[in-house]
Length: 72
Image (cartoon, rainbow, N blue to C red):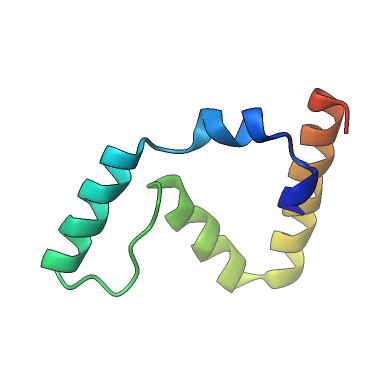
């Protein structure tokens, strides 16, 4: 699914290496089981585990919007 998304779109949304590194170190220090790359991901994970069919449908919609916006 991600292969079809232009790299420029992915780069805009990902945190900087310094931010990711700091978050990872904090998670390790706090002995966190899952260290997320962005706070919004927690909501995605919760929705995914509550209803897989709905989550897959939502991801398909997001992919379609990305393709429409970036011409792929």
